[in-house]
Image 1 (cartoon, one colour):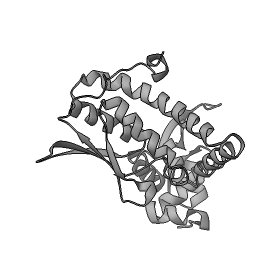
Image 2 (cartoon, rainbow, N blue to C red):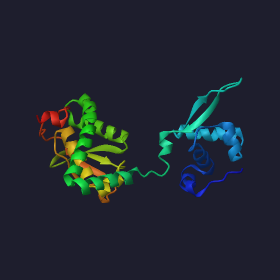
Image 3 (cartoon, rainbow, N blue to C red):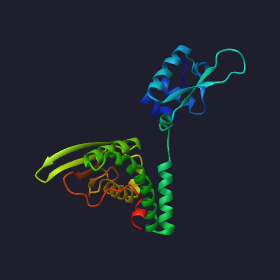
Image 4 (cartoon, rainbow, N blue to C red):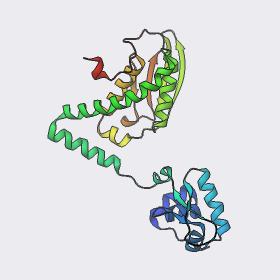
Length: 241
């Protein structure tokens, strides 16, 4: 087996194993067919197909039919999926931090707050349209909110508890898709918590966040308190008129 893995794929080797890491690294530049992969990596086509099958099951590669100029069956070329692209270094967090820092230094803290509120309002409007399907049932809305957060890269789950103070739902987020930005700009976490209150119609308590070093972001949401305001799917700007 003639597989050469360079230093940039060390973490991929730990995750995928040497052979599949080499395939992913090869597909990073451009889609490639089985025969070309086999020749480049010194493997049999049967072995390459087997490894591609495992990568496809993990949603890391996808096949697409490529047109042939001559006779014969169309060839299948494999490409990396968006999920696989996320395995490689990504500096978007650094870029976002620089952008917010620039905005703060040039326009002031209010400008950063305005941007974050603008961004969160877009997310809130999208979430509100889905949560509306759950009606006014707060527990159902929190469950649906957790699903939406997970889809957006903020892995979340909900647990319920009961004590003398009443019934509480705990919304726990185990992964933050923008953690690097939230660590540098705590306003991000604050505007998100405000969005939760707006969507659920009740105050939430958020004492722990990943951005501040906790193992999870945790929101406590009472279930037996009346709504502070009617749940409304309209943008805040429309409601304030």
